[in-house]
Each structure stands twice: as C-alpha cells, then as structure tokens.
Image (cartoon, rainbow, N blue to C red; front, side):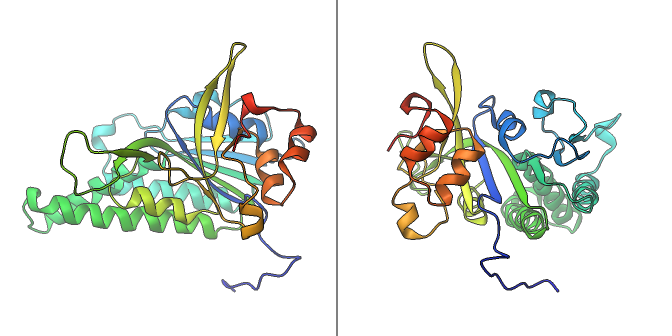
Amino acid sequence: MPFRSLTPESRFLPAGRVLQWGPPNSFKTTAVVEWWPEDLDVVGSKQFISLPGEKGYESIPHRPSIISHVWQVDDISQVSPHAVLREANQIVAQVVVTKPLTLAVEGIHKYYDFAYAAALEDLISGGMDEEKASGPAYGKAHKTTLHFINRLSASGVPYLVLTCWEGEEKDDPKDKSRNATKHRAPMLPGKLATWITGEFGVSVRSFIKRTPQALLGAWQITPDPQAPGCAVKVEKPVAQTLPRTIPQDFRVLRDLIEGVQLSEVRERYGYNNTQGGQK
C-alpha cells in the first residue's frame, strides 16, 4: 500500500532525505563516503549512482560495503537522450530493490541536461520550430526531473542523498542589468533551482573552509540572502537553535535535527567554530 501512517515508531529517519549542493570539488562525495550510515559487514550497504556525465566517482573508495554504479558507453554520439533517461531510471530501480542502507545519487544537474535534450527532440520531431521549442522544452524537462526526484524520495531506502553543482540565480529574474544582484542555488534552470530545495527534508550547501592547517568541508544548513535554498525541515523550536554552518559530518546534522544542543554536539564530536557551527 503506497500510503503509510506515521507514528513515533514508524517515522522517517532524521536526515533521511538530503539534497547536497555546492561547487565542484567541495567534498560532496567524500562527505557521503566518510559519514553517511554504512554497515561494513554488508555488501552494498552504501551505494552510489553517478548519473550520466557525472565525474565524482573517482573519489569513491573500493570496499565490499560500497558499490558504485557508473554510466559508460563506447560511442556517446550513438546514444539518444531518451535512452539515457531510461537507463538512469532502470539503474535506480535495480539498486533500490537491493535495499541499501544509504543511496547517493550524484549529479542531478547532469540528468537535467538529458531531460532537456529529450524534450527538445520530441517537440522538434513533432513539427515545432527549434527556436520556439526551447521554452516548452524547459517546462517538460522540469517535470521529468521532478518526477525522477519524487520516485527516488518515495523509495524505501532509509538514507537518500542527491548531489548537484552550484550556480548563480538572479534575485529578480526580470532584472536584465549587468549588475543584477544574485544568490547561490543548485545549478538548475529557472524555477527548478528553487523548487528542488523544497523536495527534501534537508537542503545543505557544501563549501570549503580554509584554515592554516587544512581545507575543511563544511555545510550551510540555514538560509541567508546569499544562499536562500539552505533549509532543514524541523519543528520550530529546533529550527531556532540551528547554527548557520556545521562541519560536513552526518552525525552532527542528524543530532541537531533530533534537537541535541549545539554545545553538546560540539563536545560529542570535538569540533569548534573553525570547522563550522557558527550562527
């Protein structure tokens, strides 16, 4: 039965659905490898799907508990965008039935490119002029991508992580000036850059903090004018206690969502302001 009634015993796990977006090389994949739940004694308890075109798989280690799925073809010129979308949906279905503890689907911005190409191809083959087809193709690609995301979210996987690159969006889409103010957002066209952040219980922006000792991965978990898409869906008393940034540590994120005080979380995992956790 698709619908389920949530009770204290059957509620969704905290941070069970996370959108992680940020610039390239901001440790998004590494964060999943190092901190998301994994049973080292179970083959494939943590699985990665690198969507067609995504390159982050090179930072995924080889161990029995991790399985990585990568899309490769001999001649990409012979592959239609419709086939790519179909294969992406097939691998998701194949992985979900194996019941991994954590599933990371990486590069939704790459999936969108194929969704747009498929939509444009359909409209042109239907007789529409290519220039006129561009706008409607975006609308169709938005729907295709959201449908893919909703299927992922509705799966029974306990922990789902979706990654995306970061781009810039105008604060006012109608402002055509060269100096129009902008904000950071997932690198997706138009309204989808905003819509996608509402499709997850947690939307975090990944970035790098530079210290004299090292480069540290951090997450922004609450919104500000520069990154309004950061959000954690929790009860209001908990939301009011959340810091703006935290280290890239799933345990920290999970405990804060559960209502554990920031001071206790810092002591529990041994980090300070230089690693995130700032108001």
